[in-house]
Length: 170
Image (cartoon, rainbow, N blue to C red):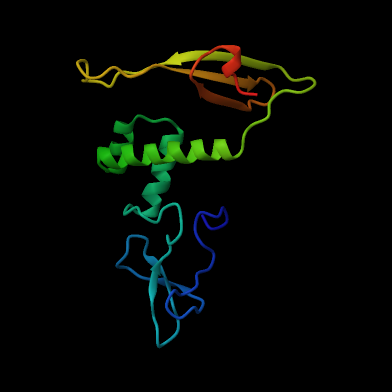
């Protein structure tokens, strides 16, 4: 996790500004904390500090499994059963992971095509009614425009208000 930048490689104590060291600590779910070695300080900080996992109470091994199962597109019920976590936890993490992926795609747009490449382009109308909400407010349909480079597999999708040429992304 550190090698991939998911957890900090080193930590500075917020009280004395000294370097902290990893310390085995059985009272926390991860069994490890950052600890200030200064005898006058001895501050403990979570190894999750300033990370993607900071606000979660689940053990890191369960979080990694949850992310893995989400990537495999397992149904939420299967993830709940496998990890022994509640429905809300799986739903919250799935929403968070979708948001992280969306943000990353917006920050790093994909360029498609070029000499020798074939790009497939299509649009679709997406709408979903929530289960058990037959008498609820209808969900507005959205047009999604997308393209995929058939050679590389790179793709993009974008929600558009209309599907005419004036609304297509550049």
